[in-house]
Image (cartoon, rainbow, N blue to C red; front, side, top):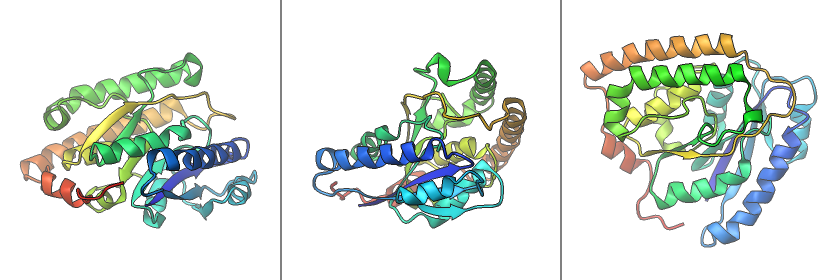
Length: 268
């Protein structure tokens, strides 16, 4: 089976080689154990924001296909990657070594075995104190609390539980669901938007605890600026969902959409 790992980068020369080597080693070890009947052929797609430190060259040397995306934005990098991906399964991770790329294969196995459509990594259930600054922790708490309060009526009615980590950037999902999702955000709010859209459109969603590590190199996020942007997005999205719900636009044929996203008869 073909799958794609998408990694957005911006001046990650210090860590990108380590991330890609770790991923390739883990996937080679996982194939005979987890996917003996249908080994995965992984495409590594690095979407680079015109780095000036040689990140793209390092990624290419590690066997990645590199797309240079000069339009700024975390979400923009992913939207570009989604369009270019060729795999039936898409996985995502950052280039700063914070996400456990070795855990991707077991998560793919769970996606297939449990007939899920979207898995999101939960960084917060077992968070190392060194992995996130206090400012970042507070920002995550504010956003997740707002989400639980403002979106409870919609998200909990669909899944029976709320999203614990709305800001996580590690996802494993079926590429076939992308045409159904309304993805509009070029910045950090894409992390929230893709999860909300997957749930409200009736796709089978699970949130799984992952190990989140201390990043390599200097942080590029601005907790207050990005936090305000994410909070404003959540407020506007909540109003949009209320309108779409009133127009009976959610869920969009949930069971039919989920069944169309994969072949239940496939054995991997």
